[in-house]
Length: 276
Image 1: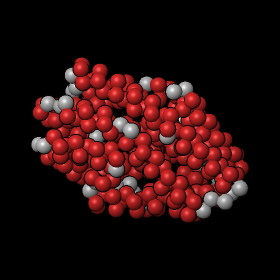
Image 2 (image 1 turned 90 degrees about the vertical axis):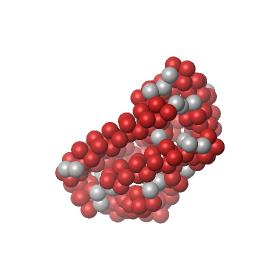
Image 3 (image 1 turned 45 degrees about the vertical axis):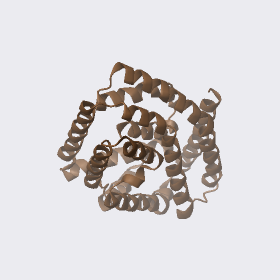
Image 4 (image 1 turned 90 degrees about the horizontal axis):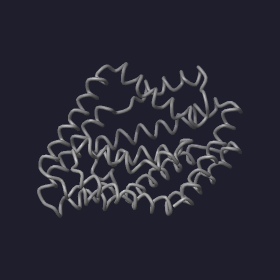
């Protein structure tokens, strides 16, 4: 599971200016994360790293140009100021599709590593995940802390794309999160839910292969339904906030920065794809 989370991080940060560096070291980072959560043997780490390198090579060649093309198609709408709720919703849906496509490239590697795990490694993973959940409960039990953490994440993302945001824009973002808080409690419950399915599936190799394969093909399929519902509602609210509230406050400098960033990210993805 943590390995898949790292895939999300990589795919999200393909939009950063040093995405080439992250891609270059992705295999090392992924193996390190997997080792932290499963306490892998030297042989498991070596095999996983080789498999990830092959998987990433295919993704760079096949998927990255597709994402770059989609970004280039978005830029004219931003330039002409023709974005609306429908277009933004379509962009969110496209991104979700690309995340799923990207994770599917690593399905076979995940299955191979999972099938090589020993009982003690499953126990280690369960313990580490429960520590992570408890840490989240301890931190976010304070609603003010949860609000601040969500605000920092959203602000960081917005400022990457449009540059620094004004006090009015920061206030609007805070108001949005007060009205539509991120469902972190259900997120923790979902982790427990998926972990339970994972540990149950390990009792039979074929069941385990199917579960891991399904997870990497469509991670939403194994989610806690209540979390899916809450997360979808939160994402829809955020889309509406972007279109109906935040967008109209953008300055010409911010709009220009957004257009430049979209094209820069497309070019970066194309360069990475060509380097394979």
